[in-house]
Length: 346
Image (cartoon, rainbow, N blue to C red):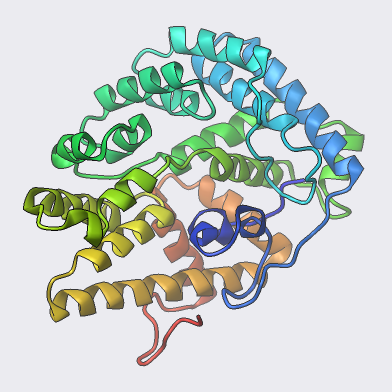
């Protein structure tokens, strides 16, 4: 159901529609190849994910309850659009998922992972409380501030103490993978989910977890991007300074490639000298090179690199998506920096 789409899961989201961003690809300059899911795929996904959700919720633990709500909410979302790899968010609240979220919220306390899971698809009040608890546990992290939302000036003012933008992607995906492995698919579900290929439980759980995270986890950034637009800044020196601070944090202190890309995009808007502009463009060029070559390297591996991804998840020394990409390129014998004169295809 959810195929190995490692490079596309986060960074490519800015370049192509969500449904396409989660399709396997080998080149940034080629459209992803659409793959049709069958009715069996959909049925297997729903039955397995709902059994997983029920089993997780039965533990009564806050992380499990919050993740069960995510699974429950996504299991039946948009069944009329079966060509997407990761289900999209539901259009109407599910009573059981809402009850599980309420239970999780009552027990989450200062557990960062539980609170991060709670903000995915939750009602506004639950999302705000969970984001505030997350922020209380990590006051220098920009991520819970953006999840909390609010007016751009208040957000930027609160962000002055931030030093990093960490969504906790790999920590959450690792935990989700382990949680999903607790409920093995039945033989018939395995056959459907394998899509006529080999079913490797650790790989399937890893890619499913990554797909789920990519489908729900990134906060809305439109207010920030609009508030830090050159036209919006005008002569507001304070806002320009605050926007630059946020841009630097995202470009230099993100645990996801999409966060780093957005930071570079903001920095590019805010440059005031040719030297600054050249520096940002060089960094973006290196970023594009790594993403492009990572995608090509994945395409050359069995099952589009699912085995490698699962192996990297098991390595605690890999703490960010950038670490993961660097390791993948190293194993493929690809340099981290592009050759002189190289430009990304547009």
